[in-house]
Length: 126
Image (cartoon, rainbow, N blue to C red; front, side, top):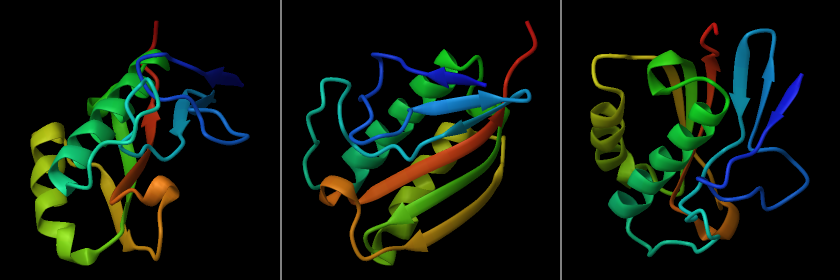
């Protein structure tokens, strides 16, 4: 088992790792719209979703993976009213790759984020 840490994504804000690699797979923690410096972005779902996917991509890359290697994601939304916007940005980021996905509305996310995404992906062979 290997714990993943990159300064290209925000540090964990609690007692957990950005991701863990085990048995050829990477399991990421949920990413919110914090910059790598730990600054929460403005309360705009478009801006936040783009940062979340940038953070997720950075963590996956550090683990030896990528968005194209993702098997499953979970999207947590502050409001299902944002589903269409998040879905459009997500589709752009993943292109023709379509991993399995769950999307759920939650009462509150860390730092009052509007969106959080985690992923399970394959780690590329070296």
